[in-house]
Image (tube, rainbow, N blue to C red; front, side, top):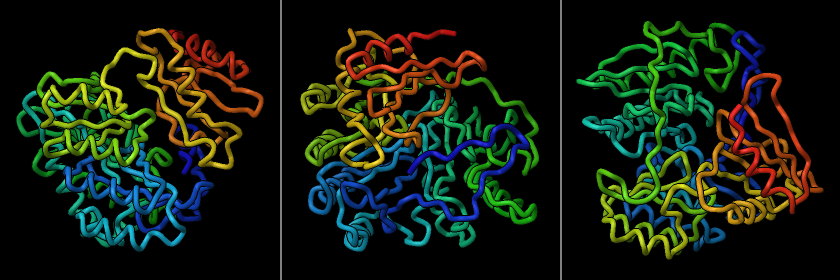
Length: 407
């Protein structure tokens, strides 16, 4: 489903949330042009190799044979039968991937996939928060879009501006951030998951008291009291693709989409755990460096420093009837045609004005128009927005130029 519009500024009118959100789940499917779509929540992006194989089997036997990693480190299966939620649910329960039928859509938890030096607490946080979330009856009142982010201290997932963010600090400390606030609350690290869940409960109760309905904290930024400390400046560095300095591998399928066969290759290479990232990639913490060549041969991106870095795209045709173009195919041709070297600004291709799956922050926005594409730099200084209309043939050069924008 499309990202929801932000409130224009603190104190701006809250968007109309009288209707429940329509986010799909593992049991409540979304009807797309290529069949039903299921979204399987994976708190912290954590999967065992056996669970990854169960997902591959489900995609191959119930869907179109592909799996999509989402911008929240979850997995989507497409091309399912309209009534396929029941059988899929049974498979997910057997694999330990559906611990609660009532809470499955609110298990939205992203976590740093690679531990910061001397920390490595977020996987424990993710499991603890997920158990507590599923055990809280009131938590079903959260939107299926409400997001928790658990950051190990480098700022990689803190940069996502989630509804509730935990940031690990030194010597058993942690910071709690609400929405996009410039302040944080200090909490003991061993109580951090409880503090995050309590913040979500306070958000729901404050809405009821104020007579408003919101899906995100950023929509009502003044609803809860601010933190006591300023938000620290974090590097926001993501782990590089390839062999990781501390061991393990980081690889990514193009646009986060892998066939069931590729998914099985991932599971075989993992030798244990897989960690799906909000950048539509996968960390294999126990995989030896010798597996990298085989993953590259299977079609995974295994090295940084190319135009594909920071590139994403919505489904487009044929999966979405709202799109006038096969945006992923057009985007792939544009990215493959760029000489080696880093791409610059993030870039997202969209088939319609909803811009499904677009990243936060400054980016190049590439929108299909039916006659070609509209290319613009979004999120820059006010008054400097520019856009150009280009044909398919002109699009690659226009995108490359826009990504080099520095002002």
